[in-house]
Amino acid sequence: MRTWLAALLLLTAGCSTTPEVACPAIGTRVGIGLTVPQPAGITRATLEACWGDQCVTRPADLRPDDATGGLQGFADVPGLQAEPIRVTVRFDDGKPHTTVVTPAFSEPGGPACGQAGPQAQLVAGADREVRPR
Image (cartoon, rainbow, N blue to C red):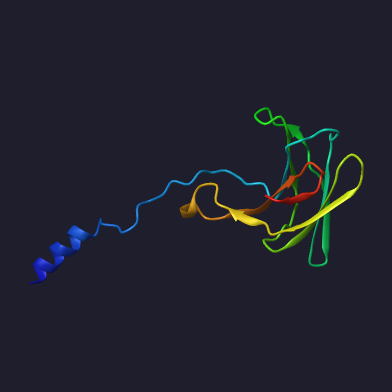
């Protein structure tokens, strides 16, 4: 009986219920992305993100999006939390455009590889008003 049990243990010792997952060694920026589909008159944007008793102001670093003809930008926001934040975007004219968005954790390597830093995505309408994307 002991021999039979030992043989069974040896046979099942190499079995595993979950396959090993190879996760990419990539970083994820923490911050807020901005899409401007109709960029007429827009060359720059600044984002102010506020949550709790903290506000962070950063440039959005707008660049042309060759596929759409619009602009894409991203503002790194250190300490950004995955909770509702108030974001105010100011374009070239300096007028404030405010919305509330909740950043979400991304999974760049898939769910098995864990979560990376929180991000939020905004889009600017034709009237330059911003909304969560």
